[in-house]
Image (tube, helix red, strand yellow):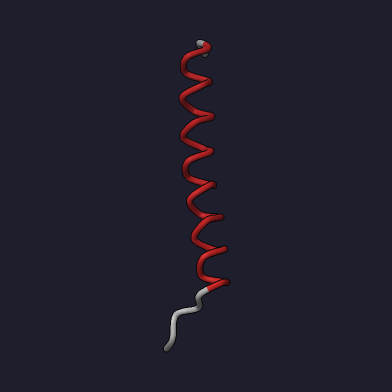
Length: 34
């Protein structure tokens, strides 16, 4: 794989996992009332 492909793959992984972690932390701080 080229360097550009590796950088783009790493960026996509960081965005996905970063969003997932941010959602979990936000839900833990402000749980949905149900």
